[in-house]
Length: 316
Image (tube, rainbow, N blue to C red; front, side, top):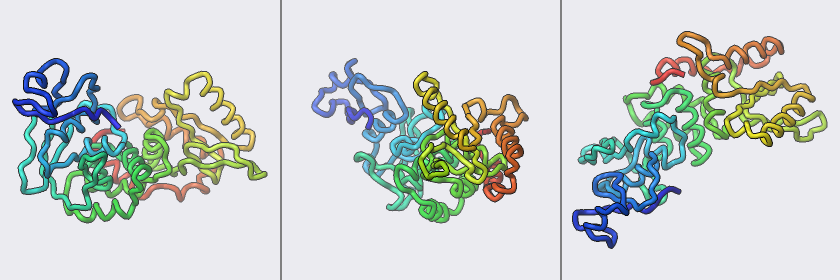
């Protein structure tokens, strides 16, 4: 998993080390009352693990810290944030200048253990993230939790209805229907969410394409099978010469059997300036018009995506 060399300390020391030894340069102090041996990489995940060693027995990691341990992707601006820890409502929360302490109304089935560390369950973590993430980032996190932990739409909906009022509830409610365990990368998930928010038909993730003989041709990131339109997200790892050649050959095979392939990169998902449209949306709209396919895929529009977009914490 991550660095597991953390241990709690007092003025007299800890884990077999004396007080003078734990204060020496051979250790770092991610939080008061905890030490980690060198080499130690400073990251949200490792700071969260270290925090668990300095926390009361009835506490648990929540929010972005729970997401980090559960393997949910988080946007870069949250990686430098303090880890989050909570205790059940009515108890005293952890006081650390290097962490965020909270009291949460929590039930036993909303807690799980990850490598011996108590964290909020995937469903509860998703709901807590809705207060901090934009819709595309929330979809990316939700897709990953579904894929890695088998979290279902029903489980998320039950967790949602269990709590009456909280920040991010509308965003969470409108995002649950957009989630799928089929998405294989955060950027694929964000791309799909941006398309839904833009009011366009939403493509299917991980579409398997076969030729007229039934032979496998390719699996595309996102696709409209009705009109043979594929969207392929190209991250930085696609720019190596070998990967570029592999991608070019695969897309050539797709085009040879009548598929239209649109390559998507990070700039296609960002507004060039305030008030400007997101480039990807215009590209997809033009492709659907050229293929005369609006009547074939119009039913794919997400019903609640635009409502959820009005409540996002950060712009797309």
